Length: 469
Image 1 (cartoon, rainbow, N blue to C red):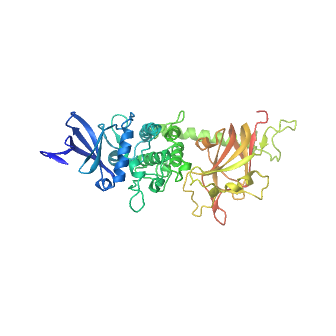
Image 2: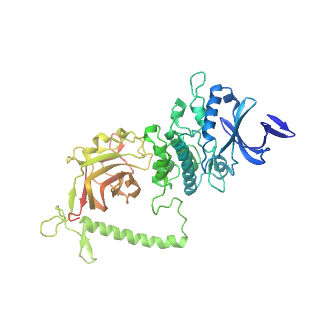
Image 3: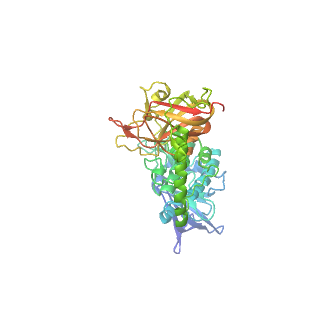
């Protein structure tokens, strides 16, 4: 490296102005190209990596591939060279600051801003993948944010590192918090970049790397469950359980219709007080309606509503024909989207016990011996065999008291985003369930003490439908 007065020169041409960021593999500088009179970004490889001839050859190979490629969200490669035996890469000027600096200055980002950055990065990564390359160094230090769209840098560095091994046979890579676990074993593909973007999005929302966690809602409960599940899916330790590519991950992160990913605005005091009597009236109406529907109340008496006479039979239209059809599901499946992916943890094999017609058998969650789920919930999905218009449900349990919610629809994976109001399980209960669909989710949010552990158990479940629909 030469000097011109007080200015450091690289290759006799690039005047180093300011260091932008320094990572385990490169130092990134803002520089001026004295020959062409333009501002550029200079990436100087760590000297310890430059001592490996195989690495420098792989980096040169990556540079040749990058020279034929450009994308809107990528810092384009302009030049390469070697200074004092150390390789360097010259790219477009990068505006703004690194995402790392932004997080240090402002803390966690609002969900809308974080998702916008992740979406833009995934679009760039998809273009990289379509060009036959992988990045493998995506993280807060390699994403620059400013007034415009995010820009991604250091393409080629991660791939050159991941493909090599040192003298002791270990990969020559110093892993940041966002590198997929398989990269350290010399294995990498598109799904490794999916992991990196998922880890970066987690850090944008939580203000800290995921570590061994996959649920950002454990830190920020206001994050939509859909986003939380998408991040957890991207962070799966097994690449086979992640999204297949950046495009699939981007689709999973897009807001659904009418969804607001920003935190709700605070309500004024007057609106809050006005809401109280409305809530009371609605709650009372709901209680009465539920009582009438369940047959525990009926019209009559001095107040207009009175307790109904007990009736062991299903409602009928007077001709003996039931007005409600009880449906036994054709299958039952444990549903644990926020767990570690091992279906055996939520006893998938015994899920059919909840529909076998035998009250002495039951499906149950795994045991939570500290009585806490440590996640938003866990459930069981019932397949009715065809789409039906439902009016209610029946549930039996040997250990009442756990809290659950219900949802109905034709997409079993989307049901958790549609769960309704909570129910508290009774030994034998019947309740309202309004909706049309083939699948019913019972989403359990608390467990109870069963004497030998804390869990939720369901002996039998039936859906109630309109027989004429």
